[in-house]
Amino acid sequence: MTVRDVATWNSLLAGLAQGTEPNLALALFHRLANSFQELPSREEPNEVTIVAALSACAQIGLLKDGMYVHEFAKRFGLDRNVRVCNSLIDMYSKCGSLSRALDVFHSIKPEDQTLVSYNAAIQAHSMHGHGGDALRLFDEMPTRIEPDGVTYLAVLCGCNHSGLVDDGLRVFNSMRVAPNMKHYGTIVDLLGRAGRLTEAYDTVISMPFPADIVLWQTLLGAAKMHGVVELAELAANKLAELGSNVDGDYVLLSNVYASKARWMDVGRVRDTMRSNDVRKVPGFSYTEIDGVMHKFINGDKEHPRWQEIYRALEDIVSRISELGYEPETSNVLHDIGEEEKQYALCYHSEKLAIAFGLIATPPGETLRVIKNLRICGDCHVVAKLISKAYGRVIVIRDRARFHRFEDGQCSCRDYCGVWAIWFCVKLLGFQKHFIERCHVASSQGFVTFATVEGHDADFVFYTRQEIQDVDGEKDAGRAGMISYKIAAHAADLAKCHPYAQAWDDTLSKARFEFRWLDQFALYLDPVTTMSFHDETLPSEGAKVAHFCSMCGPKSCSMKITEDIRKYADEHGYRIVEEAVIPGMNAMSAEFLAARKTISGEQHGEAGGEIYVPESYTARK
Image 1 (cartoon, rainbow, N blue to C red):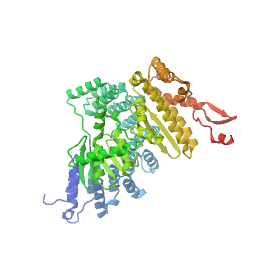
Image 2: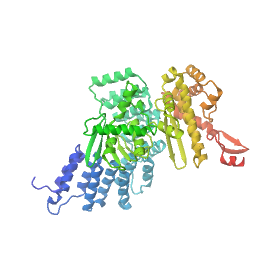
Image 3: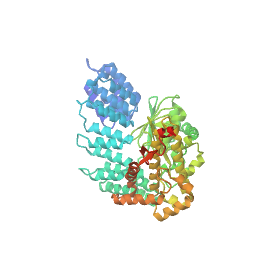
Image 4: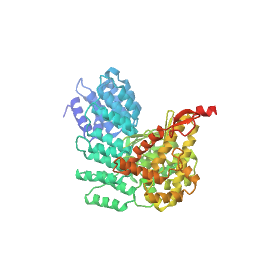
C-alpha cells in the first residue's frame, strides 16, 4: 500500500493486539508513533490507536511502554477520552502499578464514569489483593450504573484473593444476573482455598449446568492445597472423562501423592503422562531492564551474566538467612535428598530474575517480574525477605495475581498459604536449630500467618502432620508439644499491644482454633492416639502446657479425634477432615453460649476470653 491511512494502521494494530502477537502490535505502534506525520492530510492517531497499543502493553506487562503510550495520547488530547482512560486503568493495573490505575480512574469526572470504568477499577483492586477495597468500590457504584456479570466476577475475584469467604458468598447469592461458569468457578476456588471442600464439591455438582474442565481443575487444585487424596482422585477422574490432557492435571495429582510420600503413585502418574505424550510446561520468568526483556527458566545458565546472577543469589541467601530463612524443601515434591532439594529451590526462575534486577538496577528501584506459573511458597518467602534485606519493592505478576513485596510483607497477606517459620524466630528469639525440631515434628512447615489490621490481631497456626511422623517417631510428638507452647507464647507476647485486652480476647480464640485444627491433623485411631498421648505427655504439667486454658487440660487428643469422627458421621461429611472447620465453629458456639460470672457480675462469654476484664482488674 502506498498510502496507509489511520484506519489501516488501527486495523492491523487491533488485530495483532487482540490476537497472539502483542509484541508485534507494540512494535507497529512505535513505528506509527515515529512516523505519524506521514498519515494523510487531516488524519492523526485516534482513540482506537491508543486502546490497541495499551491492550498490547497490558498483555505483555510492559509498564514503561504503557507510560510512553499514555504520554503519546496526551499529545493528541486523547488522555481525557473515557474509553482511553478505561484502557489506561486496565493497562496500569496489569503492569503492576495500582496507584497509577486508580489515579486515572479518579481523574474521570463522576458523571463520565461508565460501567467499564468501575469494572476496570474493581478488577485492579482485586488482582492486587485488595479485596476489601474492591468491595467498597462495588458498594459505592452509583445507582445509575447497573452491575453486569463482569462486575460481579471482578468483586468475587477480589474476595477470592483476599480470603473473604463470607463476603464472597454474600455477593454471589445477591447477584442480579444469572451466574455463569466463571462465577461458579470463583466460588469453588474461594471455598476450596478456605478448606471448605465439601461445600466446594457440592457447588460443583449442584450447578444448573455441567461442570467444565476448568471447574474440575479448580477443585483438583483445592484438593492439592489441602492434601485430600480422595477428592484429588475424583477430580482427576472427572477431567479424564472430559478429555482433558493438559500437564497441569497430572502435575497436581502427582503433587498430592508426593506430599503424602506415595512415590509409587507419583511414578504411575508420570508413566501415564509419558504414555499420553504429555509434557510439563516449564516455569519461566522475565523482567524488563532499560527497555530490554530478560527471560529466565529454572536453573538458567543461558543469560550472558548468569555467573554474576548466581553469585548474587549466594549473597542473597546469606543475607536473608540472618532473618531466619531456611529453604522450604517441602515445596520440592520429588523423592530426592535434602541437599538436592535445596539446590532445586535456589535457582527457580523468579529468584534468577530478582537477582538479576538487584545487580542491574540502582538501589531503591522497584523490581518487576512476570511469571507464567504460580509463585511457589519458598520463592514467596524469599521475595519478602529480599524486600526487607535490600530495601526494594518487588512486584511479581504470576498466573493468578499480583504480589507486591515491601519491607518484608506481601500484598496478598500470605493468603497463598506460604510458611513463615522465620516469624517465630524473630518474634520469639529461638535459635534456628531449635525451630528446626519443631518444624520437623509439627509437620513440613509449621506455618505462622500473622495479620494485624487496626486494633485486631489474628494468629492462625497450621500444621500438616503426617501420620507416619507420629507412628514412627515419638520425638516428633514431643516436638509437636513444643510447637503448641510456641503458639501460646506468641499469643502471650502480644499483650504488649496498647489494646491488650482486645488482643487477648482475639488471641484466646485463635489459640483454641490452632489447637483444634492441629489435633485433627493427626487423625489417628483411638488406640494409637492414647498410647501416643500417654507416652509423650507423662506428667500433668505437660498436659496443662499442651493445651490452651480455654479447653482445659483434660481434653486429650483421643477424645478430640473421636469428636471429629462423630461430628463427621452425624453431619454426613464424606471426608472426615472436612468436618474440622464446621466442627470447630460448633464447639466455639458451645463455649460462647455459657456465661461466666465474676464477683456477681456478667463479664463476657466463657471460652471466648481467658483473661480477666480490665474493669475487674482495676477493682482488685
